Image 1 (tube, rainbow, N blue to C red):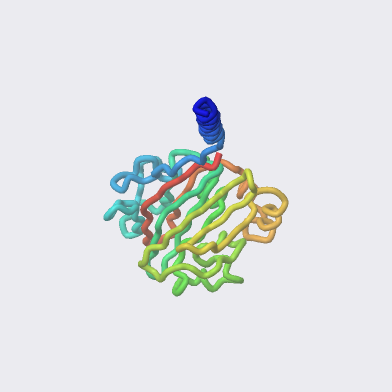
Image 2 (image 1 turned 120 degrees about the vertical axis):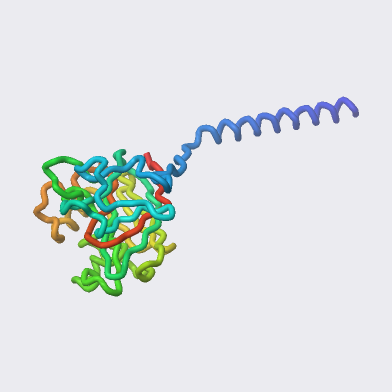
Length: 242
C-alpha cells in the first residue's frame, strides 16, 4: 500500500513539474510588446531639434516640465517646428497638450526632414491641436479641423477640453494592421487606415490631393507644430509596435 501511495505521488510530482516547465517555456515564446520610452525628460530638449534649424529652437522653452512654444519669444520669422531626432514607423505616442485661447497647433508623424520640404506638414499627416471654442478652424467644413481630427480628412468625436486645460492624447499608428487611432481624454475620437487605397482616397478628397510627398513615407519624425500660437506639450512617451 505504501509503495502504491509513493508511486502515485511520484507520478503527480513529475506531471506537475512538466506542466510548470511547459508553461514557463510557452510564456517565453509569446511576443512581448515593448514598453514606453520617454521622449521628453521635462528639463531639456534632448532628442529634439528644430525642423531644418538644428539647435536653433526659436520660440521653444521649457516651463514647469512642459515644452512650450511662445511666438512672442521668436527671434526669426521662419517657422519653428520641433521634431524628434529619431524616426518612427509603427508606434503608440502618449502625451498631454494644452493650447492658448484661440490657439492652433498640431502633432505630425512620418515627417521627412529634407530641404526640399519647407514645412513638416508637406510630408507628415497631422492630428489637430486646437481651441475648438474660439479658433476659426473649428468651424470649417464638416469638423475635419477640430481638435483630435485627422486634419482635413476625418472629423473627431467631441472630447477636447477648453483652452488652457490639459488634454491627454494617445496616437497609435500601425502599418502592420493598417489602422491609425486617436484617443483624446479617454475617448476614441478617430480611426483611419494609414496606407493603401482607402488612405489614398482620403488624401485625394483633401487639401493634400496634389501634394506629391504628403503621407507617402511610412517612416519619419514626429513633429510639434509652430502655428503662431502658444502651446504646451508634456509627458511625451512612445512605444514601438514593431
